[in-house]
Structure formats: structure tokens, C-alpha cells
Image 1 (cartoon, rainbow, N blue to C red):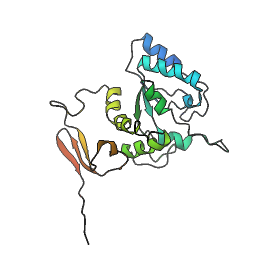
Image 2 (image 1 turned 90 degrees about the horizontal axis):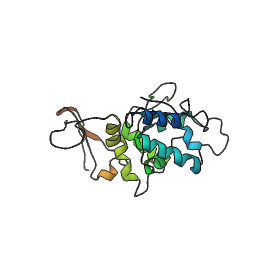
Image 3 (image 1 turned 120 degrees about the horizontal axis):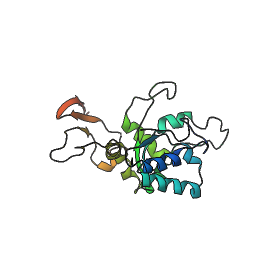
Image 4 (image 1 turned 90 degrees about the vertical axis):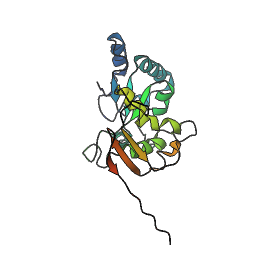
Length: 207
């Protein structure tokens, strides 16, 4: 289940929000952990004293948030003549508040986002400077936003590297897990159901 809290993809202002109602309804119906929202941009305009209780309510309802930085950066704040806002959902504050946050993309080369190629690693890299996630403590939290967190939101079974789990994985050309996004590494192998579906080879010449 998905819902945009602002009523439109690029909520520049904190008006017409429905996220609090959605949280309360989720709890009342016993749907904790089964509800996801996309964009959620309007809450970026809330002051701390109004935002914190909403984040706490979202954590209680176990709402999953699909942050969509490419589309929201493209659409938002077009009427701002100076101090142009980013108008992206406050990823860092949501994570700090215990909300399950995923980084995703929902528009590729269309009227809402006329560029992109669906590469989720590139989208995650974009989110790092946009959401101020480049610090030593924050950077390690980004990779889970495109791996473990979406799996949790989708309630996938048999996810992750463990004996007996599904053999679905991507092998990246990087040496350290913390650099898996900032290196924007080559995808050496894509493995689905234990079978290699994509293989990338590299040739190096030394002169």
C-alpha cells in the first residue's frame, strides 16, 4: 500500500498532509510493517517540534518510506526564486527516529523525471549529498537503504547471504563495503536464482 502524504509528488509546503491519519489507521487495523509511502516530501517543511511527533508515530506504525530523490529534486521548489529548497523527505531524521527508509526511483525518462537509467546505486549516490549522509556515521546506513530496508518493506523471505537463502546477489568491483556506493563500482556479476545473468569484464592496459 502506498500513499503520498502531500497529495502531489513535490510537496513544497507542509499542507494537506495525510501521514498522521495513515499512521493511526495502520495501527488501528493492525497493518504495522505492511504500509509504505512514497515521496513524503511535505514533511520536510515542518519545524522540529511538529516533525518529531510525526516521525515517532510513523515508527510506531512501522511505516516504510520510499525516498525518491531524483524525481523530488527535479519537481520541487520551482517557484523558489532564492534559497531554493531541496524538498526531499528528511531521510536522516526519519532513520534516526527508527523509521525504515528505502531509496528508490519511480520515474525514468518521462515527464516527471526526464533522465536517469534506473540504476539504484546512482540514485543512492545522489541521496548522499542531498540528505547529508556523507558523514562517518551516516555513510554506512545508505547501502541498507537499497538492500536490507527494501527487503524488509517487501517482507521478503530468504533474503540475505546465509545458507539456504535465495542466491540473488550483485557482485561489485569494490574492496570495502562502506565504499560500495561512493565508488559507483562496476557490477561484475548479477546472479539470479544461482545463475549468472549479467557479467561485466574489464580490460586494463599498462604502457
